[in-house]
Image 1 (tube, rainbow, N blue to C red):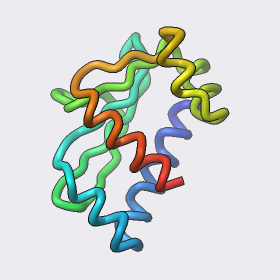
Image 2 (image 1 turned 90 degrees about the horizontal axis):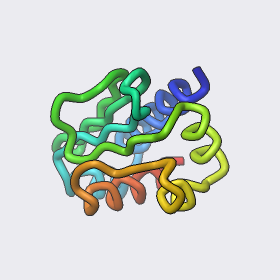
Image 3 (image 1 turned 90 degrees about the vertical axis):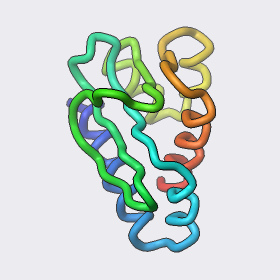
Image 4 (image 1 turned 180 degrees about the vertical axis):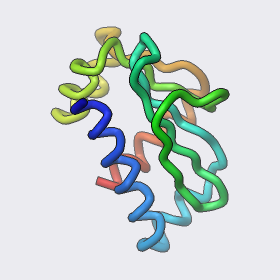
Length: 115
């Protein structure tokens, strides 16, 4: 539940920032893509759609995301995301990337700025 709530809140922050900050909206406009964050078992996830400067957030699993951030499990994801230890999770295998690495880096910057 905490993981799903964290992903929902991230979506709300991305949307709010894109709607209220012209510089952020410009950065969000750089890509038209779908970014998925989910658990490895596909039971929990949320995806973020970036389209011409607009951001939407949808619960569930996307059909064809540009990149997926796949967490070992919801508890590990929540703990790492809350403590800012995402890079450590990548290094120890708790987080895996599927898809375009450049999009993942772009999204990481966008997400960090939205907080």
